[in-house]
Amino acid sequence: MYAYLLIALRIITGLGGMVLVITTLSAAIRSFVLPRNEVVRLNVWVFISIRVFFNFAAKLANSYERRDKIMAHYAPVALVALPVAWETLVSVGYTGMYWAVGEGSWLHCYQLSGSSLLTLGTIDDFSVAGGILTYSEATLGLLLLTLLLSYLPTIYQAFARRETTVALLELRAGTPPTAACLLGWLNHDGSVQNDDQQWAAWEQWFVEIEESHTSLPILSFFRSPQPGRSWVSSSGLILDTAALLFAVVDGPRPRQAQLTFKAGCLTLNRVYRFFDDRAGAEPTTLMPPDDEPANSNGQAEFDQACQLLAEGGLKLCADRQMAWQQYQELRSRYVPALDFLSKLTMAPRHTNAI
View 1 (tube, rainbow, N blue to C red):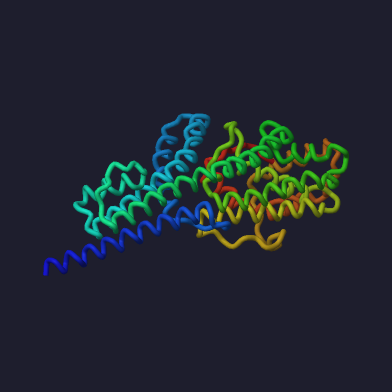
View 2 (cartoon, rainbow, N blue to C red):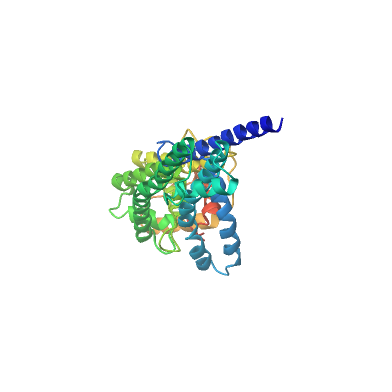
């Protein structure tokens, strides 16, 4: 009876180890090879576990600059921790399989697994079945490391492209950056409706962020080189500028600006839904329902922005209250996603951002 129980236990342990290895390999492939956004639970657990320690350290900081410096290390550390977690799980899985095929005690199987995974070759006493497992584990260990190393250039290229636009926005939107200042800069030739090239560049930027930050979600947590910058804040600035243009400026809405606004709303909401499955459906139209209530918060800043635009030579709509309502309606398309991502990434908050 004992012999049958031992055989059953070895079979269950071997199958469990095989499932653990296959699950880990699947997580690695879906993380870096699968060309679509998919939530990998194993990676999420690794990222959340590391984030707990960084959140604790950030709470002890007494300034935003200090918190930003701490959180700047989170994404690189989490990214490096991924292959460590993967190889640890693979080692545990193969330890169970070695024991299942009768390679000796648990300690010997663990040592054999570690030697094979890291290609150390310190243990060469194994059976034919153990030899097959050894070579497969060594191959798998190299594959997991190669996956991460081969995708590091892709990650940093996407990061560099994103940060170029963020830095250019800072030059154009003032310090602190505001939508009114950026809209004034777009009015450099006296007709704010004619700068389609700039709006097209921002549309392309939003499309790239949607693709890269959902297929490689760790990119969302890579912070800008300067503490006061953030891709989340820059996204909100561009969309606020478009909303201000549509609601306040008297004249036709530029078609390219409308496309950019829609692309920005879709991008923020899709990244939002990727990180929070409780988020609602993405917007399908440019404008929300007309009966949606407007929020009175920030109306003083809105009036101040309108005054600055008027002083800059822009022709504004006569009905200021209607313009305020339209501005609030447009912002309702992306503000929930913007607020969520700002908290998630600890993005800098700029007062009087209108």
